Length: 102
Image 1: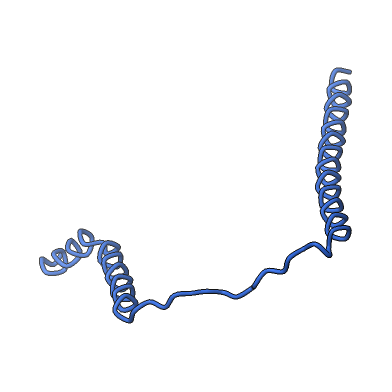
Image 2: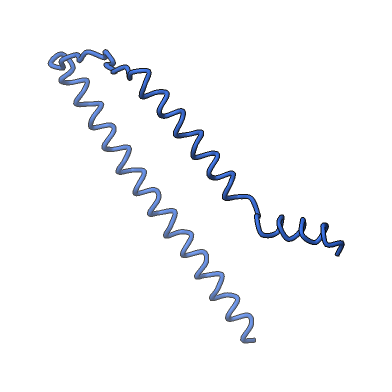
């Protein structure tokens, strides 16, 4: 009898928690949609007062020297990481064992 009660209570708790989470998600979506609709309404009503901005991208070129430095640093980092990844102790032990005939 106790198993049925616990099962019922667990089911009721699970269902109510899903309902609560769905309601919170719905309210969150509703706030987001309302905000967007208000901004669109403002854009439509005050659209003639908007000023267009220039969409030109500005960038600076780097000197070749800096680009080559970056490439060099990247290669140095890769090489150092490769050296650190070698298992020196195990490889040396393997070679010593082979030389000694073990």
